[in-house]
Length: 89
Length: 98
Image (cartoon, rainbow over all chains, first blue to last red):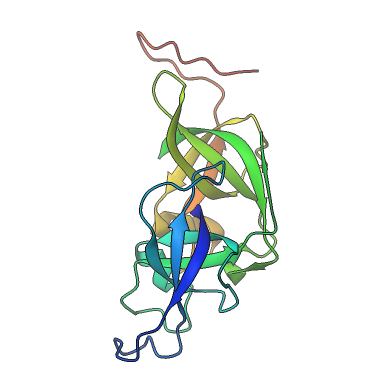
C-alpha cells in the first residue's frame, strides 16, 4: 500500500455491475515524504468516508476490490484507510 | 519478497477491517547495496518490527491472507514477515545495522 492525496471526485452513472454505490475518487499518489509521485489515478473508496484533501493509503491490483462491499468487481486501485498520522524517520 | 528498512509508521482510525488492531509500517525498499530506492510499502507488521529494522517484506495477496488467517477475502497484500539478522552475498557491501 502507498500513500495518496484525494484531489477530486468522479461520477459515472454508467458503470460495471457491482460498482453501484461505489464512490470513485481522483487520487494523487505520494512518496514516503508525502510529495507527489507519478500521475493521478482513479480509485474506488473502500472506506466510503474519504473526501478531497484527505491523506489516504491505497491498495492495488486484486486486493483493491476486496475493500468493497462486492468483492468481485473491476477495480484496480482503492482506498483502504484514511491516515491520521504518519511518522517518518 | 524484498529487503526493506522500516522508516516510519502510519496511524489510521478509519480503515478496512482487515487492519483492525494491526500495526502499519512504512518500509523503504532497498537495493542490493542496502540503499533506499524510490519504492516503499505501507505493510502490516507480523514480527514486532520497529523503525530502523532491516526486514523481509512479502507483497502478494494470497500469501498475506494465509499469514493473517483471512482467507479468502482480506484486503491485504504487503506484510512484514521477518527481521533480517544477516545477509551473506559475495561482493555486496550490504550490512545489517545493529
